[in-house]
Each structure stands twice: as structure tokens, then as C-alpha cells.
Figure 1 (cartoon, helix red, strand yellow):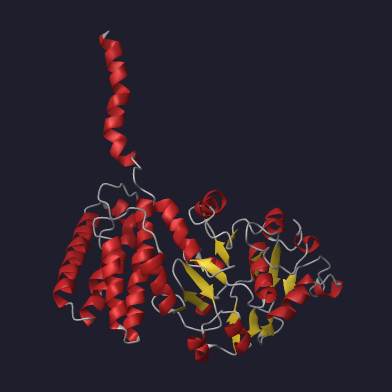
Figure 2 (cartoon, helix red, strand yellow):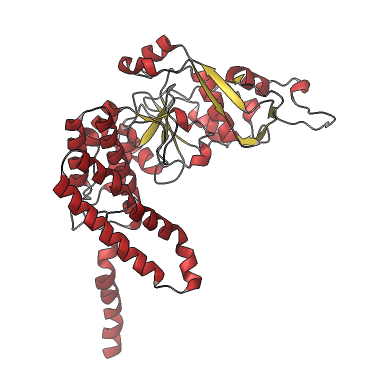
Length: 393
């Protein structure tokens, strides 16, 4: 009897000790963060994603809850498969198919799986001409030198997309207030020696879309999938919109910012899944995601101050501290723009308290890191560098 009682107690003890780490009560972050991705996009958009967490929850919202079914979510990890290219080329819900120019015969498995970028032309080449060369089946476009094997290649790595500014305004790609920032052409260089099929299809879309549908990259997409287009990104929430406005990236902050759109999304539209409730369990994946939100709030406030809009800057900062309290996400490097913005607004006492807390947390982390032996300490080099950089800032 005693043995049976002990055996019965085992699952009870396991449940008691582990319940807090597995209790998802009142936590709706996955659904709400997915909503935020979709809410970041203009109507009838194409949104490039990359992983599981920025894709499947979005598909759930569209399929089950009917949220933003006008947005076509395209996972770049799948876009190298011919069956998936076919799938996204068809209409789904309220979203038309992705407007690719390439046909199934041109992207079928085994064809153009890899495309080499051969610098036969040093100048910028019109993207339309480059893609026409790639789509061609003329044998002269498939051979290099004395090599008799078929080679899929583009004879350039620098590309240009001419811009009709009036068309850009008509399609809503850029708001009229920002018309003076529109470039006469998008110019960029792909620095790798080849591209994969998924990247080829993105180029095909950019060539064939003619700015008729908004194109976005989720902020969580790996940078090696940008093909060096990031200077033409515009931050509008949890997604960057591709626009003909050039803004060189500074300190890891990509592209330009549309303050009005970003403010409306971050402050008014976004949902937060109960993260401000101290009783809701937040795992490390959720906390990592909060870094993106905090970074965006800091950038929004900084851009507002640059343009002299102190009211919006203050609202954005206060909203950040309301929805992402320190209990949900301890202060880290991405608090620095928040603190700096509060100082610039004259909120010195509040900024001082935040700075002191950030300093204490950073020092505590560094003491913890150096407590490890040399073997394990080397594994923490990146974390130590971030903390040291935080202290220097």
C-alpha cells in the first residue's frame, strides 16, 4: 500500500513543481503577436516570413479566425519548392496570387535551383532585363566560356529598378507627404556569388509586381535573405515595407521610418497578449520577441524627436513602459534609446531611475558571466560584449 501511495504521489509532485513553467493561462501572446505582424501590413500585401513563429500563427489567424485574409504570407524557407511557388501563385481567401512572371517549367525542381551571378557587366543592369535573360531558354544564355554544361546565371550582380514617382504615389507605396524622398531608381548590389531559387522568385516578384501590391519582410526574417535591399526598407511595425526611399542603415537599425504608420500600429493597433499581467508565464522565446517591440518603440520615439514631435514621442515611450513593463522584460541594451528619449523630453528623474536600474542589471550580469571558468566563459563572449557595450553607452 505504501509503495502504491508513493507511486501515485510522483505525478502529483511533478505537476506541483513544474506547473508554473507550463501554465499558459491567460497568455495570448502567440495569437496577438501574429495579429501584429498582419496589422503591420497595408491592404492586399505580400509578407515574407522565414521561420515557424512568424508563419504558422499567422496562417492560423487567417484560416480559423478570418483575420487579415487579404495579406499573403509567403514563407521564404518554402519558396524554393516548386509546389509552394504554385500554391502562392493561386488566389487564397481575399488575397490574389503572388504575381510571378516565371512559369512552372521555368522553376520546376531541377531547374534554376541555383543561379550564379557572373560579373560580365560592371554597371547596374535593369532588373527586368536581367530576369528576362535568366528566364530565356536560348542556349547562348546558359553557357559560359568553353563550359558545355548548362549554367543558369545572370551576367551582373548590380541591379536597378527605375521609379515613376507619380505611380508610387498612386499605388500608395509612399504617402504624398513623403514624395520628395522618392528616389529616381532603386540601385543595389547582391554581394554573394549566387542566389537560391527562393531569392530568384523574390527578384521575379519585384520585377513583375510594378509596385501594385505592397511587399514586406517580417522583422524576424534573417538578414542573409534581404539580398542587400535593406537600405530600401521602411519600418512600419513588425514588418519592413520595400519602398523607393533610401536610408542607409545605422547601428543595426534598418531602413527609414514612417512615423505616422509606425505610431498608429505600435500605439493604437497592436495587441499584447497579457504580457503586462505578472501572473502570466513568459518563456525565453516571448521575452526575445519583446526585444523587437522595445527596439521599435525606442526607434519610434527617437524619430519623433528628430522631427520635433515631442507629444508623439512621449506617448510612444509611455505606451512602451505600459505594455512591456520591466517585470515582463528586464532592462537590456534596447532600453538605451528609451532612456535617451526620456532625457531629451526633460523627464530627467524618470530617465535617471531607468538608467540606474539598467546599470545595476548589466553589472550583475557581468559578474555572473565572469564567475564561470575559462572553458565555459568563452561561450558567453557575445553576451559579455553586449553588456560591455551597454555600459559604454
